[in-house]
Image (tube, rainbow over all chains, first blue to last red; front, top):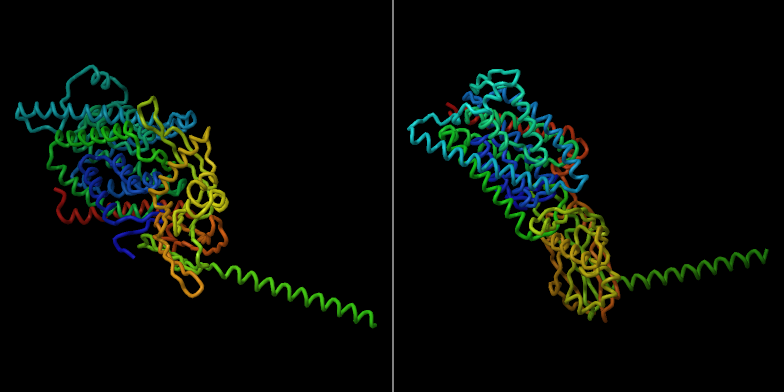
Length: 313
Length: 267
């Protein structure tokens, strides 16, 4: 008997306690810092550790419930959660998720699912990462040259796009974020992220954050809190569905992961307040680009095993 | 009356003869199977909270001058796995699924010498000993030709070896003369990846490239305690299991937030 190892009753494997706790801490830190669930990092890491793909994805959702509760609470305490905006994004995301699941069913039937999933991953991560990186770099330079310290809001110019957005019906003011938008905007973009998230099998935080920053023009710190609030509800739904239909949530693995991630999310939230909006964005952009490069390598290098478990991407 | 006594006597005599014949047969077969014995120590493996695999020792007696092959397998089953292939000659992706029928989830073969040197190909195939024999035993679909089938079987073995579920060795079985018998012993690592279930240990005594005798024993792997309760609940009370998992995660999130909140994390 080795007390450093615990047996996982659903994954049917044994794991060194320190690994999931450490992983949880690292991903929870990112969650508290950037408002992402971290599924796009955690799930592949768990699969690498020998956890079956379906169990890895489902259990990760369960632990994100804990990390995002911890993160949302920390951000809510300092007034960084826009519940109104979060709710509309959530409704849009929910409808988009349903559409995305149907899209995956259709793609599976035509045999093109894996190609579409992988390409969506590379393109979305690549585009989002590159755009965020360049934009935050230029605004950091700009704020430096102007010796301005107000780097929380992205530079907003009255472009055709903004004029078009303002011409949409059902304009309403989102007090917490300090922005006025049509109600349709969070619904449509929430839905768009929901479709992509369902296709990619992730929570979609890394897509939702750029939508809130660049399209909804919300301040970065409110974006993080609101994104976590939205992720919390998404992951509650996913955890239940996975446990109920696939029996793939491993409770013990989830507890080990959340021991790390809840603490990590708190540290991330505290640490994030010490960083400027642009700094947060550039770090997130770097992580997103690093993941893109990793996926591109995976796609082009010959894998060590040519067969794998069914169920994951 | 005399006729009836004769009939009864005849029946009685026949029954006695039959009884003697049966007894003889019993003694003969008992002697035959006593030449090769097998005992698996630690044959009831319990998966508890801190389980990280186990060991199983197989020992027994065999005729001197025989070589031994020990095969540990789970019952044949089927597995559906994803196959990877190059798309457009550039990108590695999942290109479809492969069905493997008649495959044991665990397959472990140990022998006193290299199997090819002590068993003929026909005998290996007959008793499904060694990967080439297992390859012919397994059905793989879809596979259009023998080369493709062989490629995917080799990949399947690589995949199983990487999860410690398929192993093979030779020269690790220790033998010693004990009177007119040969005692044998091997200690094997039992992988934690092997799921609960019944496993069969078969020992083959081999001479002149032929199996001359075999004996069997069992290993049972079972979940116990909290592991059994959680695995059972995940399957049988899925809705409650999901709700409890969510509540536990919410409580943990709030709990840690309160601890940090008191510590002055927020400002």
